[in-house]
Every structure is written in structure tokens, then in C-alpha cells.
Length: 201
Figure 1 (cartoon, helix red, strand yellow):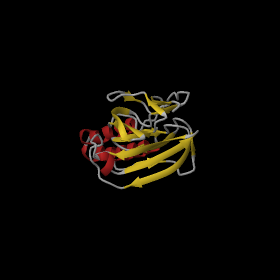
Figure 2 (cartoon, rainbow, N blue to C red; figure 1 turned 135 degrees about the vertical axis):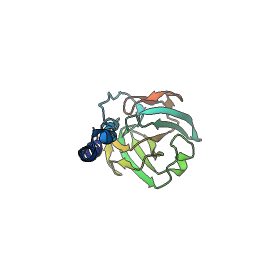
Figure 3 (cartoon, helix red, strand yellow; figure 1 turned 45 degrees about the horizontal axis):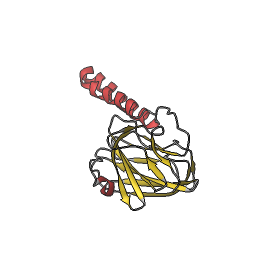
Figure 4 (cartoon, helix red, strand yellow; figure 1 turned 90 degrees about the vertical axis):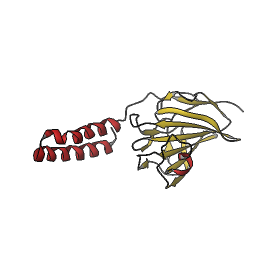
């Protein structure tokens, strides 16, 4: 459980208890339901981390697109709805070499425009002769991107590194040394689903 979920749940529960005392339980029920939803939304289950020279999904959700981003990069886009786990994980092991946070709009995260116009945080991880970047993109109702690491910090494959609150998207950028293992429409799980395997080029 991410600690944010406990704080939100306690806040809604306290407000619900006060409203129930003042007006009765039926009026307070929506606040108790919101408290329960926060506990569900901020869940953080353990995941089996695969072995081998692989890149894992940094996010739970549905693969929206697998397409060229440039002559040297393939972009894999993963959309998270409000029912997915929103904890983000490192796609490869290595060190964080760059962070680029940008404020922006809050368009529906599944739209292509969102990748350019929404609030976003781009993270680059380098390790073992390769590097992978991923972009945390805020969605329509997401209002906060969280990233726990800073440049120079080491990360393990599948390690928890951040969070996007309330519906969002993550784009992953992989070079020619990676063979993509997923297709649009597939569902993936952060830290355990293999997005790509490294090949000799």
C-alpha cells in the first residue's frame, strides 16, 4: 500500500464520520466509499521480476501503441485506467542518468496529443551498455506525477520508482538493440511483464 492511499482514506473517513454524526449515515456513505476506493487505488502488490536481459513494463495497463518514434527508437505506450495499479517500476537495471519534468495540460491520456501536451516526467536509465527512457504522462484527472529517484541513483530491474495518481499513461522508448515482445491491445503488469528482449545488433 502506498502511504498516500492511507492519508486519503483517513481524510475521507474522518469527513464521513463527521457527516454521519451531523446528518446520518446515508449522506456520509459516498465519503466512506471514496475512502475504500483510495485504499484500492493505492495498492502496491509484490510482483515476480523476470530474469535475463529484458526490459519490463514500468506500468500496469493496456498497450496502446508499438510504433517508431524516430529512426533509432521504438515507442511502447501503456495506458493506465483508474482501476490499474499506478505504481511505476524501473524497466531496466542501471542508473538514472536524466530527468526532465515538464508542466502541461491534462488531456485524456490515451490521446496521441497527451504525449506532447500533458504534464510529464521523462526518465532515462542507463546500464550494461544500453539505455531506456520512459515518460510518465499525467491524464485527465491525474494531477500529480511522483518520482522517487534522482540522477545518479542506481535502480534494480522492476524496482518501484514512482507513481502517477488517478489514470495516466507511460511511454517507453527502446533502441534497436531491443526486440519488442508485446503488441497493441495486450495487458501488461509493471515489473513482471516483458516488453522487450535485448538482442545483438
